[in-house]
Length: 308
Image (tube, rainbow, N blue to C red; front, side, top):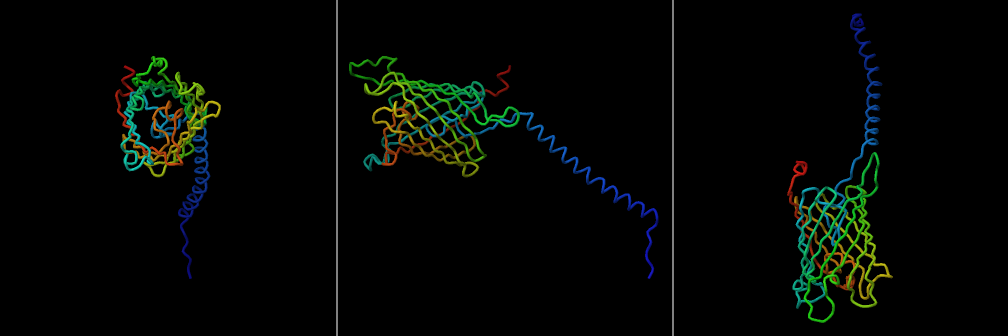
């Protein structure tokens, strides 16, 4: 049997090819390692901010750390029916609805101003909201976002008694620090230490200042739906007589520019003066108010126009 012998030039080419492959493999591995080191260095020398901790400026009743953004206006409709245990005569609460209409506007990406009007006690309210700290990774990483919130509310009911109901006595004020962390794409939690000051209280035994610790969170179910929870624990030394801790459970649906928020809660009011400092319903005895929020965003001025 005769063996086929490769020509000398063919054997030389084969040896060069094998040698080239042997040298290329370490070179490719070295390039991959350098790329990984460069990416890691980039992550530690730049700051990446965490976005969309929540999908709305409202968790359920209360605010979230989110702000609308510069030049964006939010039109908010908040609606609460009466308690479900009010019976068939009141159509299980449908005959006892309360409503709040509100507008929020982003002066900057961090600063928001808002106004609203509630049918409960015919209350007008206004607020300022400032995102002081943003959660971030990389250089100067920050584990949480912090938004500061301050509001005032005016009771505009007509009174026929001789009691002093002048303008200062009709006012109530709220101060909050909203502290939130987005743990993953699906889970966000928020802590809300709160002070509500009322110039006029129901009895001489009640305190003008009510302190509460709020807790809330959001868990995504799908790309456009989530479940929310919110709870405000009133500190015993400042808790008014007959007032309970506010508890709310909700379900959010996002549809483009709209966010629909469905919820049940033991609080009838939709601003801090009511749901923090004046919740009367017993959640576990059927004093449940079914309600919803509808959020619609409008771009009033594109960001570039502010620089002209």
